[in-house]
Length: 279
Ligand code: A2P
Figure 1 (tube, rainbow, N blue to C red):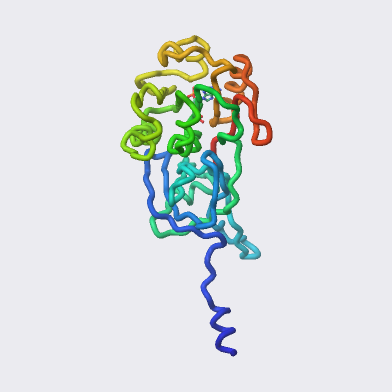
Figure 2 (cartoon, rainbow, N blue to C red):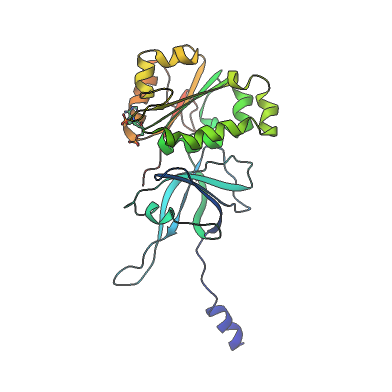
């Protein structure tokens, strides 16, 4: 009996809610994505976020370690057998200064309680769905773009992504390109891929195919002309916003100006907003 107790006592403690990293991709010196195992019991709606992180450093006096957690949008769709995340690397960021060094086989903490407002349930039916992202705000849309319901519910999806530099667009651009090769999604997207999916990447601090903030390009009408769609209307358009704070506020005001009303899980309306992860 003594032996049994001892065996239990010396069992190597593992992280609470640990999941194993399966792959890591570095996109730029400021951005990376990674995939982890998915707990069998975890159900979520595409577009939701969870708390993930690592154990922090030991407290200098007590030696106690606490988990260091942040809210991360799940970038993979609800049907995927793994979970994907898209993250910024902040050199003095409490979490991402460490998280950027993870490798396949390492463990991270994942609290399996998904929540969020960037979900289909928070929007009324419509014809055209807009995804407005800056930087890592693309993550929830990486999930929703791989969710068949997105194409079943809407005739057209418009994805705008504003970043400082062109390299920061690669994750999103490759993801959208990969949709074409996805058999499951192709069945629902059907013919005319680029008619149904309109991708509008822009950069603000480096030359690219389209320079400027999406907000300015909408105000001038240039974005609508380029996309060959009318300005947003509450009769036809639905929108999800995920970017930095200033962007979210500015775009919210613009959408309200077009007559769209903010929705929530408990009160579906025309648009929803969430902050992109910044650390
Ligand atoms: P800008 O370079 O003109 O500031 P960040 O990396 O700072 O989060 O910004 C990501 C992108 O969002 C940048 O291209 C930035 O443009 C843009 N941005 C920042 N604030 C706003 C805003 N209020 N409206 C539109 N775009 C914005």
